[in-house]
Image: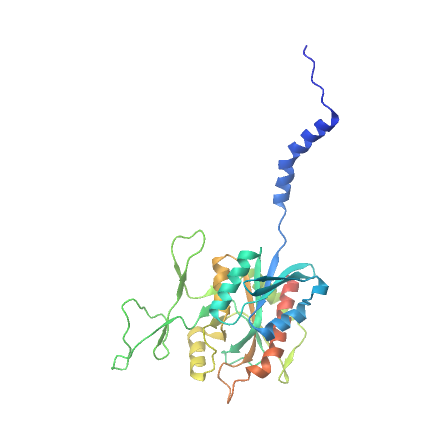
Amino acid sequence: MIPRPRFPGWFRLLVVCIALVPTLAGLRAAEPARPLYAICAAYPPEIAALHKEFGVDAAKGFTETKINGLVFWRGSYRGRDLVIFRTGVSLVNAAYQLQLALDRFPITHVLFAGVAGGTDPALHVGDVVIPDRWAYHAEAAYLNEDGKGGYVRPAYYRANYENFGMIFPSDVSVVREGEETFRHMPAFPVDPALLAAARKAVPKLEPMRKSGRNVDVSVGGTGVSGPVFLDNRPYREWVFRVWQARCADMESTALAQVAYVNRKPILIVRGLSDLAGAQHGANPIDENESKVSEIAVRVLRAVIDEL
């Protein structure tokens, strides 16, 4: 009989530990990652409201990171990990800066709060809308008149919407991972689970007032975006007629598109700082943007509390 080799105790312990490494690694991989919520807004009044509502401060544990000139504040709120940043105004800024954030941080959800122009005639300044889809109103062909009361249309163009004079709207097409061809997207959807949280949060909100009335907060419907500050009554009426749009802004649909192609859930909260040209005289956004930003951010925080 050949005697069994004897190994020192430390060697046997080492072998056991090495054998356990794959098991421990598997357990580690199985642990769900903590959600990281991107909380963003477009310009200073909106960002100021976010900082105030979520307590963005180094003394409260928020850290600052700069990437390509864009500042990200990372911290926590009631046990939820956040990264807060400014998208900038305009479709291009919003798309670029959200994609930059998604590329550099392990973001799981995207939420935005800010102001917009109201295009639904049933709404008032201060009201808040949380659309369930976002469309572009200014992806379009600008066409010459044909001298017969119509317009000369290029062969490629197929009209799916009523035109506004020379402006003939069209849809964008997108492709994302796992797909082989571009698809037409009349609108980009908002995440159903985040919408459900919004619907739970809204009835629990304390009354908020603007211009002597309690503001209305509603969930659902369509929002639209374009590269213009909308302050024109006939165009506003057309936007509502064609899309039944509740509000118009300059960032949201680009954010929704980026979230869609990256398969990230998104929710966008918009408080109405003006009525997109329905007023008499000058647009009142300057006198309303700070207060309405605070209202929109308060609604967003209530939604996050439901998650």
